[in-house]
Amino acid sequence: MRFNAIAAVALAPLVAGHGAVTSYTIGGTTYPGYEGFSPTGADTIQFQWPDYNPTMEVSDPKMRCNGGTSATLSAPVTAGENITAVWKQWTHAQGPVMVWMYKCDGDFGASCEGDGQGWFKIDQMGLFGTDPGSEDWGTGIVLKTLEWSSKVPTNLAPGNYLIRHELLALHQANTPQFYAECAQVVVSGSGTASPPSDKLFSIPTYAPQDDPGIMVDIYQGGLTSYSPPGGDVWEGFE
Ligand SMILES: *[C@@H]1O[C@H](CO)[C@@H](O)[C@H](O)[C@H]1NC(C)=O
Ligand SMILES: [Cu+2]
Image (cartoon, rainbow, N blue to C red; front, side, top):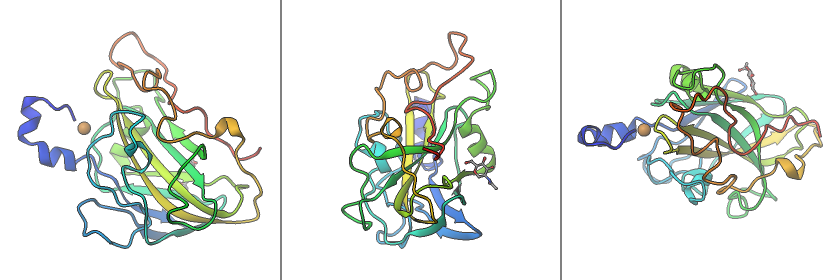
């Protein structure tokens, strides 16, 4: 949202309108995400976070999982299967969708909060048309369909992983808004692959704040192509 005087009148409902991943579907089974303002301690696969406010700085600790650090549940997924994130509502149609994973050292919990340079992209979509003022963006698809489906790399090594869905809203010039949530999944399969170090990033601060994919005015300067911050997807074959 633009926090101008008119919007401020209706601030609370607008902020709630940003939405979050409220459930995940894997292999025909639905797992609970987090709806915000739920009673604390709800059983979810998603890290529970404190508020719906956008994260504005790529270095903000809330970048990682919107301030959440743990969940009581996890969902099983076989490498090569898709994970579909479902939003109850979403507001903005300009900006990329980025989906990241992180391999835990062992168990979920305090030792698996996403520390260090361990995050890799499994899926992303930025601008797929030529008019950045249009809804031809990954987040434009989320606006219309309220879901995003991503394939877990077929040869990804089994283990406990976090999956992080990140919507970067770019509708306001040079004022990026990040919305990210993390969930716990247990990957099975016979894969042995792990991403090479050039595909691994730390979150927060996977890119500088002045990255052209972050600090951008999509309405000026004849922008016709766009690269999401944080590099390419790891296809899973290395
Ligand atoms: C699975 O995810 C990929 C992206 O990783 C997507 O292209 C494909 O459409 C998805 N399949 C289904 C059935 O949703
Ligand atoms: Cu907004």
